[in-house]
Image 1 (tube, rainbow, N blue to C red):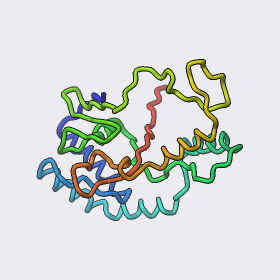
Image 2 (cartoon, rainbow, N blue to C red; image 1 turned 120 degrees about the horizontal axis):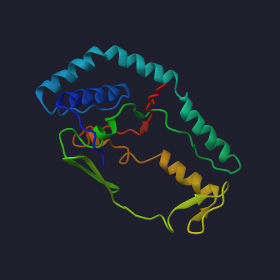
Image 3 (cartoon, helix red, strand yellow; image 1 turned 30 degrees about the vertical axis):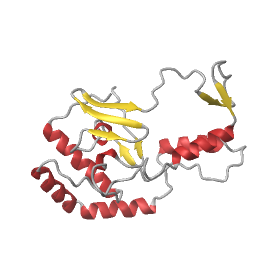
Length: 209
């Protein structure tokens, strides 16, 4: 459960920030404003940043395929780990994602601003007094007999199932290429024109000397 609480003004600012990032990705914005003030603020913000958004999109196009240092390390591991199997499909990390780069974004994206629920075949989410409650459709309290570990590396525990690398490659490909329905952002789920995008996390940790 997410329990980050935002003031009314902070929440409006967060919604505007999300819309700005959606605009930069070429995705539909949340258009059903929760009040007239927010609706006018959204229109003004997008108008003021139109040229900046166009510049960002062009830079993103030119840098297509260029990964952040963290993504590059993950991609290098995948390439190295699966180099001894034949898998014809791409296993590249997505490079056009909505980045969760500050606290509170995931919470706000979990539900539409003008609604209190979101449901698909995998999860049901609700707005409650304490924050956001996410209920997965298959919520198991144990991984015994179901948690599979790819062969190679450390020995596998007796209650786990060891699978070949090719099984991991197929599972990874499915995870990196979800259906349009699974990419639907709950934030825009109550409107006809919905944002469909994958989400990634890239938070900068606070370092104290």
